[in-house]
Image: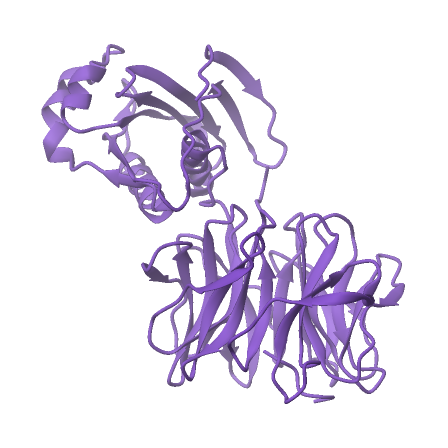
Length: 452
């Protein structure tokens, strides 16, 4: 919110052993480099058959792991908005015929309208360990595309493994990793304060990260996804603090100058932060280095706030009412020289614009704009230099944040006194509510890719 002053190339498939230090499970990957290029705006959904997971011979699945895993994967594919799942009744006879056999009649699957076929085998191992083998087939070209084998040391890691495989499927389809494994942080009102929560992309695993019992503002992720930096009033001053993404370590105070220490944004290329300080009796934008060295970027008697970095770290978009009349607009400045090297205004046609968010590909900037007496999310294209309205739902839509693949935008939706985080794909009118509760989902912040 605007701050008030002081206030398809295919290759042979090989068996590869991958060491995964981020996950306590082993991974065997049958990898390939197939890429099916699709334009984000004209892409059609791929028709996929996700067959029942087949339990290894002699194994017993008393907890229904296979059913649960298939449900998770099916939901991930649905939420990616890139796949349409063929109803199992259509292909069940063929699936039963091939069960237990390595022979796959891809032409027969294609005749049923299937474009991609996913077959999965799994085993329940001693001490609660699991083994899953996924095989992906292209029925159109009658080819085997991708195989993945996962050994899971703990049952609780099942969901993360399925998310990772779903992201591999999107990678095969588009050349970009999927986002099933990502998370979104947001603020929810609790008692008399606001606390930070983190939730998976699919709406599961909601966790409260802070318990500050005070007003917290604008959480943002570090580029490696390990930390969240935000503004907290816990010390009776809007201080800049940092906490780990699990909320297990004590929070650290990064900066505690008199007045605002707010609106942090982490550089994608180094350890610097941009933030807004009011120590000079005006809202100005600074960078803060890892050695706690401050550098002032804006010098204007009007308000400057809400900085966001370009992916290459060379530019910063921000909000300012320097155009006069108390009408905040979106500007771009050089990340090194600041506004003394000049600024470029990119928002027009609205008397109120705020919360710029630079896309991961660097070609777009999403922001909040007043449109017909409501706040909506607009997306500015840096190539065409035009803005389009993304959101059309009733209520106010503000505070956009991009998914790391640049395909989705999460934002705060407010209708009456109720707030929540919504997710919407670029170029689509379909929306999905992510957070629930009367006062949840403010200031959403999408994580980077996690656990590479």
